[in-house]
Length: 305
Image 1 (cartoon, one colour):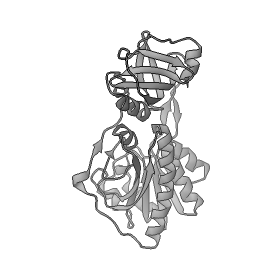
Image 2: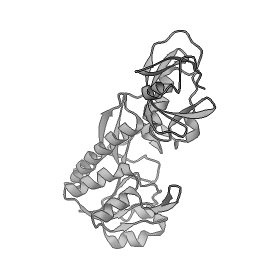
Image 3: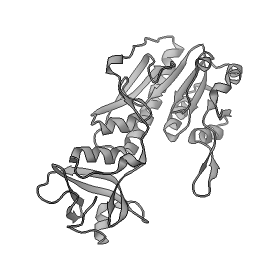
Image 4: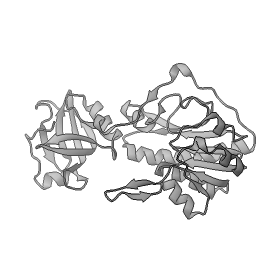
């Protein structure tokens, strides 16, 4: 079975890697065009393109995939596997593959269709999430499901959960391809009544409001870590917060530092408190909160807002 793989970010690399490790016939890779990165705006390939090039797989970085139907037909693949590719597929593109186009989506569909399923699962307080392999159709993540793999969220940040789901997606991709190779495709329709949608995460949404509950704030911090990162103001500068814990706390003013020790920085919130454990001050590097305390850059009675 000839496979085209379409993906772009680091999240998709383990999926492509696993397909190759298991001897699947990936005949081409499609990804987003190179983009300028960093202060010097160096034109940089996507992680998927870099990986594919290292393994001598033909790469197509179409500006608009919908304008390249003929090229896809000429490649002659049976199926396409997509994972965080980043472009909308038209019906003409879907029709290029006799065995269908199959997308690896990082949620337990029909929950969290759309652009930010991993962050949204954390923000919503879900205990579990996972990956769904579905047959792509024109609707947004609405296709029939081939298989689902679950994962406990626990106390993971977005970055940690992203890595876990990336590996889970790789396992799901292999299972899906093998089902397709054997013609064992029993699809399950999504329950439209249970569908939820999530929008693209924005940096401005990561501003911490300490009037909110510790649970809400902790979910926000973890969902935005390591990017685009939650933040607050301290002494007139931005303080980025990467991780925290919830704690019981009475007394103190909203946003007040009530304890600063080897455990981190304890801050009063609405109905309790949080212990900040990892942070980054303006002009500094990311560090443990206890190191920030040891440097005497924060003390009991200081206010975060």
